[in-house]
Length: 403
Length: 130
Image (cartoon, rainbow over all chains, first blue to last red; front, side):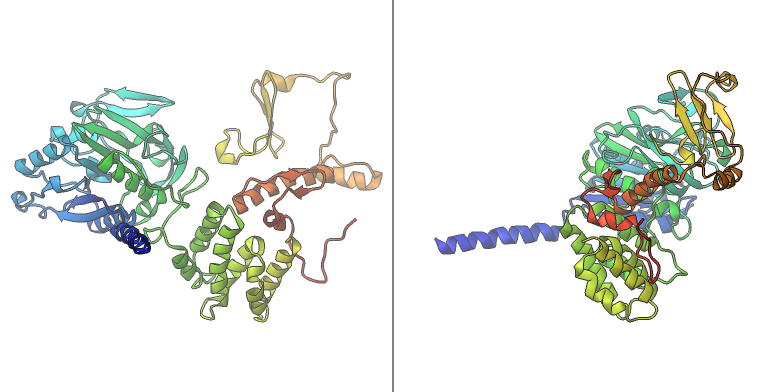
């Protein structure tokens, strides 16, 4: 009997380990790129990395031939994937590949149209029905109405005119129009998006489409003076399409892709397109209506990675990593144990001889209010360092002011 | 009461009083605006409430030094006004909702947040208790 119990425990243990190893990567994503008026060579690897970070995707990149190449050679087996990401704005695919793509979506395949994905294929009727709205590529009234928001009302505007425009790149506020959609559920109603192009004057069939977020396109920035669609969801056959106009890539990627608002909505939109639901948590560093939030490394750092960056801080550098630490502490600390977890990790940096004094100063300031006796001996040690004496004594005095 | 920064309120920085029929707004430049400009032309009768009148902030202070009277912006009001802003900052810095006991002037049940109410002073400096 005892042996049987032992055996059962081993089995349960194995199941737990196997599940953990699998990492829950249950969806397959294909990023289609290879031609774009944008820097697809920088954006596609970032999109791949961002999908992998969720732990629920595997991701591959499929490249079309370069412009003028033989498009017949581009025929990926879409049916192998749960979601296809369109980071493409170039020549038409072969009729066979287009038909396979339509078949894939009709049968329930997911699609994410990313940034200039909605510039693509102006002449391909089914594709335009999938993305709902598009811009540029000689789009005009023949392709469908302009769709935008005026106050709380969606406007379908059949006026004549070209489709697609954007003003100067800037930070702008995004407003969720449906906070109950799986993609936006739990996000703030409004948040500041990182420096990006604000797409405007999009027009198209707009069938089976819901605009889940808009942004006001300010005429002062060369915009339209209307609230323009930014995030959309569309149903096509059994397939789901998530359309994000965000994420303009520079040569090195840049702020639009570093924006946590872009990253999070892209990850959530991809999961929704793949499965119809969203299981990801809202990250601690999601932007708010008060300000934007960037991940300089395109990923959410672990606490350890963040503290490593802080230990290399000097006053000529950005305090971004320290701000991240502060946000983490604010959002993830409810109990004394939560604070202690952060405190222990911070004390390790204080004790690290290789860590910079400037980094230690930042940590001393934070520990002065959220610390406990756990950090006192490390701080006393730093008080012997003439460079850190003032900050260390300040922290000790504040820590003893209220126990 | 609602605290908002300049970008969030159309009227800009200042103070706005809302009544049942409209509002009056004043900013630091002594510019008065109202929901209806007629409100600003109304004459306050002798038997109505008249507030402390001062035409010059610094002059008023100097006058009060001489007269030992109370200034138009007395220290108690200043203290209570800035308390609201500082407590807001403590709530942001700690990420917590804080409760303030205005009589004891203490944050209730939150020793960590309480540490942010003052700064330790380098000796021999200190805040004297009066």
